[in-house]
Length: 95
Image 1: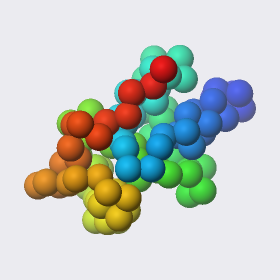
Image 2 (image 1 turned 120 degrees about the vertical axis):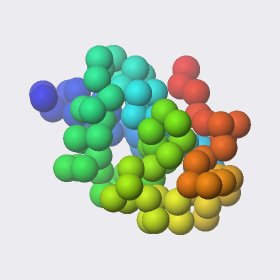
Image 3 (image 1 turned 120 degrees about the horizontal axis):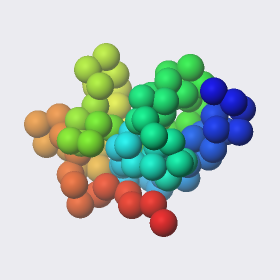
Image 4 (image 1 turned 180 degrees about the horizontal axis):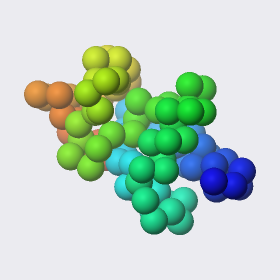
């Protein structure tokens, strides 16, 4: 992946407001990417300084390997999480 695409994804994730969440696909679409997987790759390799916890699966569920920390961070920001699923009403919509 070229640096411009990588940085565009980082900028979009950084712009997700506190107390909201979006899906990997939402970020990919906003960045003009065809695959949501590229968002996960960027976050896993270069996302420690970003609000990575605000990016979830389309269903509002976290990835199992980061679920506990992700839910902890989201609830600390005021996102309602029930049965390990973020409230749809708090999903951020780009543009």
